[in-house]
Figure 1 (cartoon, helix red, strand yellow):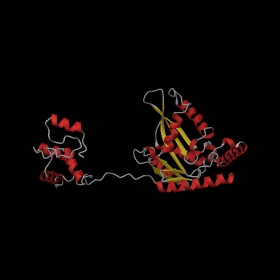
Figure 2 (figure 1 turned 60 degrees about the vertical axis):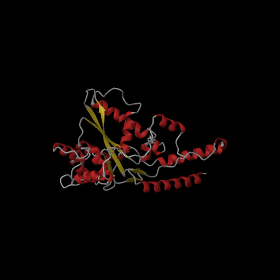
Figure 3 (figure 1 turned 60 degrees about the horizontal axis):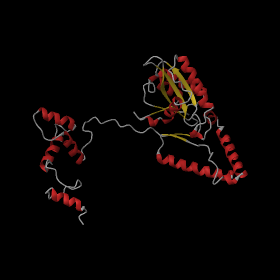
Length: 332
């Protein structure tokens, strides 16, 4: 009935204690502030003198004047209790909004770019690899290895890729982080001249640029990546050229149904995936006992998202799923 064990009662009797000693009991601490004392703390915190200061500033000021009203943690606790634990200065902290959602349904609609370090044999000295990637096809459309990290070199790299891919004005969106090379005046002027729409990460949020970050991991955890630092910039350039060729034309990317970025960039992936589906259908027809269900899904990925709105992306995924089912039925 009391929800306590016999042993608990016996222990209390031996200790000659008649109070409830359970840790979950409700009790008032001896040092609890009275309602008058709590009102005094709030009055000081909201006074004209201290209304713009946090408790971490209020308590030392009062201490310098020989006053102690309450501890810093008590000030914070009471302000939180009254819903007043907000920014107390006139200058409000800057609010960073999530980047605008971008969707690519074909090549050369959305690119991302970033810079990574390549180690040299001199400690503290690096080579800088600029890489531009198309998020729809995952193809590396532009790259450059340099001894410097500047907006001008990034501008030259993107302009070269823009020309090679024959991009039209107002066709392309370019996403990057907030580094100084990405926001330099030279690059911004170049993007404006080319008619490229710029998009940026939130500060300190690398997930806003996942395609470039994923590419760097693929590069540096690749079996070809050298174990020793590069001797010279020519060695670094030669290795990156080899990696880009392998990545674009030999590497089958898991996110695009295991076709190469080069095949997807030129639209060859659709015919390749249709051929794979037919191969699987024929294999199931020849030996149906080996198949307990349907064939593997080789449907092309129709759209690629960058920082998508959850509701919109979910609707598009549902649409892709329906299209996949319809194509399977046609093949069957």
